[in-house]
Length: 32
Image 1: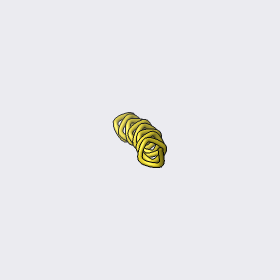
Image 2 (image 1 turned 45 degrees about the vertical axis):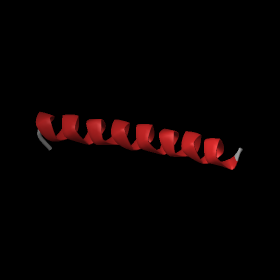
Image 3 (image 1 turned 180 degrees about the horizontal axis):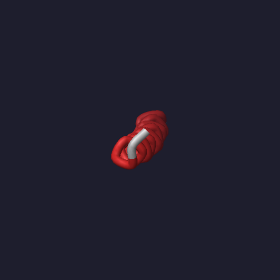
C-alpha cells in the first residue's frame, strides 16, 4: 500500500465517523 492510499483510507474513516456522529445527532433531534 502506498502512502497516498493510507492517507485516503484514514480520511475516509474520519468522514465515516463524522457522518455517523451527525446521523446520531439528527436522530435524537428528530426524536424529541
